[in-house]
Amino acid sequence: MIGRNNECWCKSGKKWKKCHFPHLDPKLKETEHSQFLRKEYLKRYNIILKNEQEIKGIRKACHLASYILEETCKIAKAGITTLEINDFAHQLHLDMGAIPAPLHYGHPPFPKSICTSLNEVICHGIPNKIPLREGDILNIDVTCIFEGYYGDCSKMVSIGKISEEKQLVMEVAYECLKRSLAICKPGVEIKEIGNVIEAYARSHHCSVVHQFVGHGVGINFHENPQIPHAYNGSQIPLAPGMIFTIEPMINAGVQEAIIDPEDEWTARTKDGKASAQFEHTLLITHEGHEILTNWQR
Image (cartoon, rainbow, N blue to C red):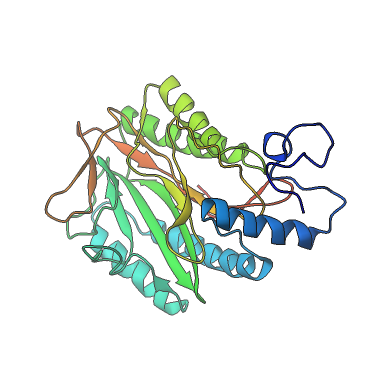
């Protein structure tokens, strides 16, 4: 089996890493492809490329997370509290035989089962007893554990009529996600994801939060690789079996996030302007990619 610094199998005279990597000689059996790449990516990047059994389990967890997300979004109306939304989602997890991954996660332990990020809250908003109001925008983020595997997704909900600024930031956030997903296939370097996102956001006078990134997921809540949503230099090529989230956080104003010093979780925009985020988990396949979280906008 060739190494990254050996001549590429196509006989171009270039090193494999500068030519067809991570694509292997098509004459090799698919099992040889997978086994070699899994070993290479774990050793070089500490990235777990998932096998068929793992993919099947993660796909089920992602489908369930999407179902919980969509059902939970349906109850987000003016007058309901995010704590009530959390309790609804928590019960759905239990009814489906799943575990809410955020509950007691991290340091300090996250106190609720989902994240609810309202208006200027970028991410990691903690559900509370304040009722939603006409004109609010809300991100609901669901990560569930099902049969030992993780599924992770989020989307936005608007409460009644919203301002033009909030509508814009929501549309830009969704389009950033769509455009970044569209380029994902084996051989594309991770940096290209962030490049696409930041270029589009800037062209619409929005900013991209740099402090939070997408991430590998499936066997653990957070794994390698990190997926920056802004301009970056990551030259790690996407490879079949890689599963990760893309979750660009787009601000109507400046990109800086301020972490709440009391709860140590809630991230807000520095200038108090609105923020929006949509999130999918995807699998890199031999042909391109598969979106594992099948929620609809």
